[in-house]
Length: 193
Image (cartoon, rainbow, N blue to C red; front, side, top):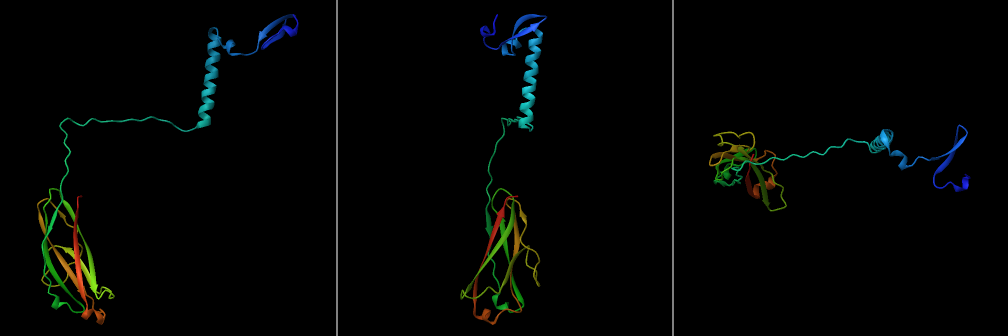
C-alpha cells in the first residue's frame, strides 16, 4: 500500500514490523463502548469547566409568588381637614412682643393624619423684607408667653385638636415695619402616617 492511497485523516503506523492504518482522533473514535463514553464525558467536563472559569460569577433563578386570600379587600381611605378661624390682637404687636391666636383643626377624613404647617407672609409695600417671626405650635395658646415647638400632632380620624398661631415682631425690627402691612397665610397639611 502506498501513501498516495491514504485518504482523509488516516495515518500509517508500524506495529511489530507490520504497517497498520489508524484514524487520527475524530468524533467517530469517541463512540463505542465504555472507553468512548468516558472520553465523551471527559471532553464535556473540560469544556464546561473552561466555560465556567471564563464567564465567572454565580447564577441563580429565583421566583416567588403568593396568593391573596379570596376574602381580601383593598380600599382607599379619604383625608380631609377642617381648619377653624382665629383672631389676633394686632394692636398689641410692638417690637419685641408677640401676638397669638388659638384655632381648631378637625380631621374630617377616615384615616389618621400627621399635621404640619407652612407659613407664607407677603409684605405691602412688596420691597420690604418680612420682619416677622411666624410659627404654628401644638395645643392652645398660653395666657402669657409663646409656646415652643411646631405643629406635629397625629390626628385620628374624626378627632379635633387646637393649634396656636404665633406672630412675633423682633425688638430690632426696622422702623419701616411700622407703616407696612402683611398678609400671612398658614397652610395646615395632613399626611397619612
